[in-house]
Length: 99
Image (cartoon, rainbow, N blue to C red; front, side, top):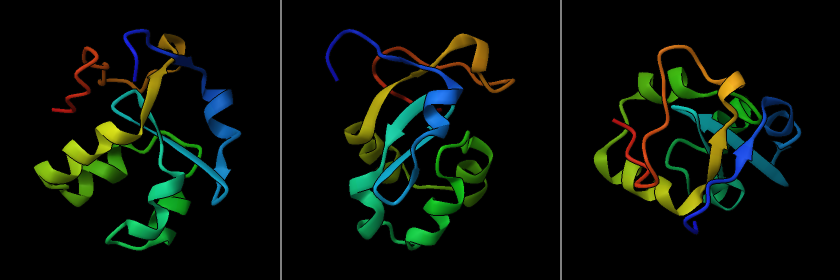
């Protein structure tokens, strides 16, 4: 992503809830994971269940590896609007670190 952060509202996130356009928010970062559906080791259904939503709890409950967290950088498209942040989670700087 370029130096400028795209701010995405929860309403905009919720519009991307299908296999043709699948966005999720994790730790208030927004990811377009449409192209990752076929590659996800846990299958596409688990991603589709979280489509268009804040998915931090589901993501963290699984215990994703550091490699998975690194891979997320490729799909990062912006930050969830401050008014739509999940409680207890704040986006990091543009480095996209999630922990």
